[in-house]
Length: 152
Length: 361
Image (cartoon, rainbow over the protein chains, first blue to last red):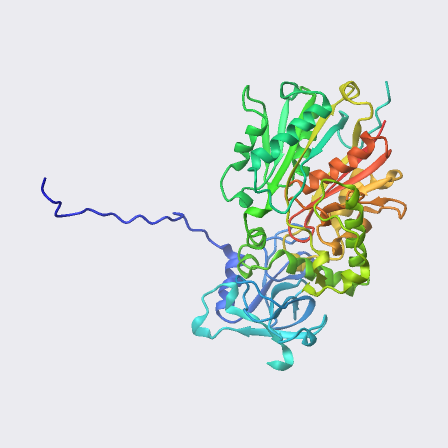
C-alpha cells in the first residue's frame, strides 16, 4: 500500500458559539471604566446606584439617568486578606472593601491596596487607582484597585 | 386522632414524618453521590414505613457546579430507582427549597406523599472559585472574592454596628462544636474554650478559622405527607404551619449586611412570632451570621439555638438547609419539642432565606 502523501486536517475549536451584550446600563458602566470614569444610575426617589443596575434593587422600578460618581469615596466595610488566593486581583496582602463613592447611595466591591491592615478602617477615604489608559479595555480590572486618598 | 394545628400557608396540611442524614465528613472518598445518597433514602423510607411506590412526587436540591457535570441530579435518581418512573423535579438550590416545592406540589391534592432530598460533595472542587460564579458576572465575579472574604465583609459590619463582637463569634463557634458532641452525624465535634478559639490567627480578618464552616460532604432526606395520612405513619408528625422564602438584591453593596430583611419578612409570613419557639435550627454557615439571623427571626432568648451544632459543625452544601428542617422536625417527631423553627440560607452573605415553622399536634 502506498504511503499517504497528504493528510487532511481540520481545526476544531471548543467554544460557546454565541456572544452576549452587556446592555445599555452595565455596558455604559464598563465603557466608562475604559475611560477612567465611575458612573451610577438614578433609582426610585433619585438614589444613585453604583454599580448601576437596570432596576432599583429596593423597589424593582426601572432606573434611568447616568450620573458620574467618585473617584473618591468612603469605606463602609473591609476584610484584610493576608494570603491572597491565585484568583484574587492583587497578589500581595490587600483588603476587600465596600466603597460608597462620592455621590452614590450604595457601595461597590473592589480591592483596596493599602499596604497593611493598620492602614485600613471603616469610614476611611479612598480613591480610584486606574490602569494606564492604553491598557484599559472596558472591564472591572480597568479600575486596578482603590487606594487610601492621602496616598494618591 | 390528634388535631392538626392550623397553618398560615397552604389549604392542605403537610407534615414531616421522617428525616435521615448521612454522616457528614470532610471528603467522602469511598462513594459517589448516588452511593452517598442511597442509604439515606432507604433509611428515610424505613422510618416512614413506606416504599418508593407510595411516593407521588420526588424533589431534590443539588448543584452541578460541585460535580462539574451537567444534569448530575438525574444520575442521583439511581439512589431511588428509576422504574416505574415517578413525577420528579429538581432545584439548583439547597434541598430546603426542594422541600418548599414539594410542599406546594402537595397542595394540589392528587398525591399524599413526597420525598425530598439534598446532597453535595464539596470535596470535589474549589468552593471559592465555584461560589464566586453566583455573583454579578460583570462587576463582582471577575474579582473572585472568596466565600470567607465576603463573610468577613459582613462580619465587619456586624462588629461596626455593635451587634456582636469577635468574642461573640467565638462563643457561637464553641457552643456549636460542643452541641455537636451529641450529634453523631456532625463533622466538627469538640469542646473548645472561647479563650483558645480567640488565640487563633485571622483567616480573613475579622474572621478566625473557628468562624468558618467546615468543608463537608453529605446528604439528607425528608418524607412529607399531606393530611390525616401522616397519623397513619408516625405518632407525632411535625406539621408545617408556616413556610416562606424571600430574596434580596445580589448587589451586596446595596444591602445593610448586618440586617437580614429577607429572613425577617419570611419569618413574619411563616408566623414565627405567633407562638413560643422551643428550639430553632438556624442555617448560619459563619459564626458571625448567627446574631443577624436570630434577630431577624425574632427568636425569644429562651429558644435553644442549633442543638445539632448547626452549619458550623457540619456544612454539606445543598443539604445543609434541608438538614436544619430535618433536625428541627426530629425534635417534634421524638416528642422533645412542641413548636420549632427551621431556617435555610442561599446565595452570597445571606441573600436568600427560607423560614419554616413546625408544630406537633
